[in-house]
Length: 242
Image 1 (cartoon, helix red, strand yellow):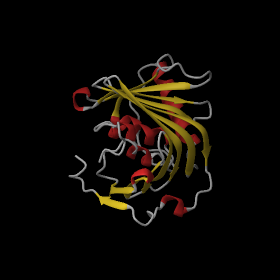
Image 2 (tube, one colour):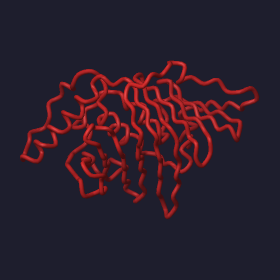
Image 3 (cartoon, one colour):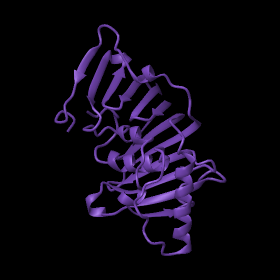
């Protein structure tokens, strides 16, 4: 199921960890011990991550405007719209450009509806490799150090907006990872301004976010969808997605 249309397989796992750790929106901190601080700078990174987690403890929903850019083999695809997240693995991506479409997760199933094609594709969230799937973990508690080998400040890498910070995370085992590095740009209020993933094959995926609102009122029915009459419904298994 290549619902990203220009997306790729393999990288979503890395972004899942990144997105979940950035937000750290479940109550409380992880009990896993942090690695030894080898320098004052590494201590500063640990302190920054701790403050980032604390700022999201009581956040239950998020809304933002996004731009999704995928670059590979000299080709670029850009899409944009509004995205909503809620605890329980729920998310809703309302695409406006270059075509209208809806990508929805109720925490268990994924749905992609393309009005122009009168088609709805459904799959299991856990088995999907779609590019947007990792973001459903945005309101979950994850441990950054459990997955990444090194985390550091990298303010010179993305040319961030004044006052923003940039973190760079590297995989623990490069030979077992499909990505080379991930970057996240955060505002002074710890809003996620931008996520960037660079892959081993020189391709990249970037998500800038704007107009970010926390704890917006969202009715549970907002993450449900009933297709119009006459819609072709395609149910995909894990095997179909490979």
